[in-house]
Amino acid sequence: MKNVIVFGGAGFIGSHVADELLKRGFKVTVFDMKPSPFLKDGQEMVIGDLLDLKTIEEAIKDKDIVYNFAGIADIDECAKRPIDTIKYNVLGNALLLDAAVRMNVKRFVFASSVYVYSDSGAFYKNSKQASELFIESYWQQFGLKYTILRYGSLYGPRSDERNSIYRLVKNALEKGEINYNGTGDEMREFIHVLDAAKLSVDILTDEFINEYVVLTGNQRMKYNDLLLMIKEILNQKVEIKYNPNKAKTHYTITPYNYTPKLGKKMVNNPHIDMGQGLLQMLEILQKNK
Image (cartoon, rainbow, N blue to C red; front, side, top):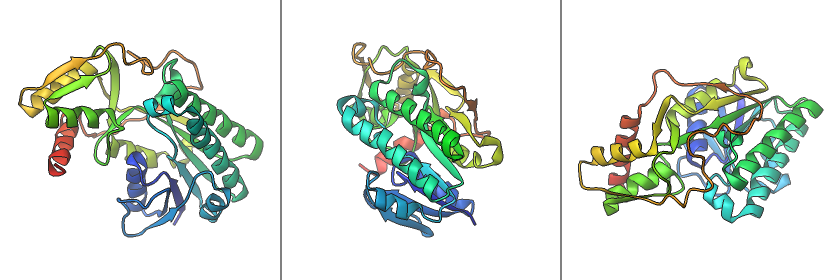
């Protein structure tokens, strides 16, 4: 049985990946700053700070695989907190890399973003680009094998106010209105978090050693169509308001206007389609009212 630790394993995508690893027979440790509300029987919990080298070294000891989902994942939050973004997204990842080398970890899996392809994304994008370069260098210098996962627009259970679809659905449900920062012509490929979690474990085969993997799903749509879909599913009056001047840190049609190392795209078949996923989000929010 392989021993895996998931940093940021109490969060949105990290907790689902920890669950998927457990389902597939891995021994799973979750590392986060606070106890995970999603911890399952059979998962161990370590509470600590990503910048505490002694704590992360002890946590990584005897682990075969390290996943890193830790850090600041919200683009707008990164824009407001650039120094914290550098500390947790770049330095924190570098500390994990260094500890992984010393503890003879066999694979380092990093949660990156399709924003590495973009001129948009500000400090969030920069932190992911920098971390990818450090990961490559740790392979070249120390032989630490890696897989980099470039996620697209995730949504689904365990999301919160930091997730765009969660905010849109919640506002439509509770306020009868959606305030969208953009024109509505912005294009995204949405992937349900459960599909993303499965693919995030599928990559542990040798085929994906030292590879960049694009996990954006196969449901490409304009935000305008998404907003209309939410309105239709709710079957009630929802006012949609557009704020075209408030989307400066986000890309419009495609993130692909920067050229990093190319990634292999993976999709789930079968997968959770957008309509099913939105219905699930509505059910979750209605239960929590």
